[in-house]
Length: 154
Length: 198
Image 1 (tube, chains in turn cyan, purple):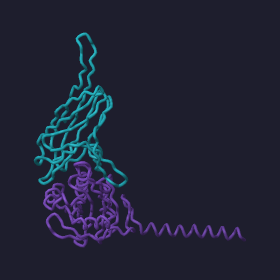
Image 2 (cartoon, chains in turn brown, green; image 1 turned 180 degrees about the vertical axis):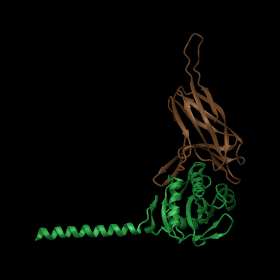
Image 3 (cartoon, one colour; image 1 turned 90 degrees about the vertical axis):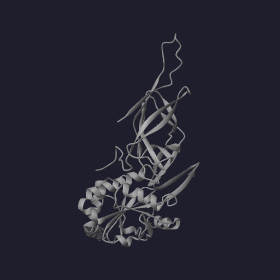
Image 4 (tube, helix red, strand yellow; image 1 turned 135 degrees about the vertical axis):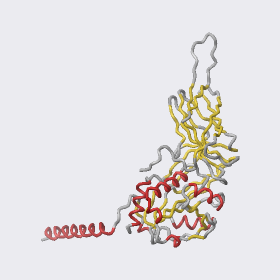
């Protein structure tokens, strides 16, 4: 399991000011579902934790022409997927990108993603002060048939 | 007299109810999924499999069929369902030879035969991906009471679709609705019930 910890949004710290606010965002176990030739889209899954309230405002990757934050919603028996313009992460909160919930959709893949590869992904967060901070993570490409952690087998 | 007859009537109804309950018990089979035997779902199916062979349900007589609907652009529910089916087949062991998993694309425009031929065997080499023209896809979905909507959202094409599937018995009758969150063990149990003639 890989964890990326990012220090975000350092407040302007004047030499005479002792307090510095600092949001620490941790991205745990980012992975991308592998694809077969001909398949042009896939999902990125991960867990994001933050010590301060922040908002994920964009996701991008050189591996895909477009990346959208999606939420999977079950409406009765219907599976629907809807884009989210941004996603709030509460202070000391966790947001899971996992099958059955959120995922980042990597669309128009520039080439098929093969198991074992690493995909560079840039996450941009906007703090409560309005400042944007971008950070790069590397997501492992897993098997197309990689089961989610919470998959019911019994 | 009036009171007596009403008491008798009550006894008679109770006895009738008891007999009915007994006969119901004898005929009904307990499934983990919802029993849809009486709903006359499915039947008509004429699609092309990922090898290019034309298929109807009659091709699978003698086998239990698990049928699901989805699309390959789906990063979430569809691969999860197919993995779940691979697990069902694994749990079934030797009985797996008497089961056919079918996966019908509701997005035939983007899901070409070639793509299905790469995608479906990644989960299990015995599974079959099926596709048809728009009209054929709609006809199958209607027959199985499955809904799907292709939604254009800015530059994205989003496909909403029913997440459930069905278990069809070896005579081609649709018997059990398989919900998305049903476990592989429970699905496998229903497959075994069907294979035992339930």
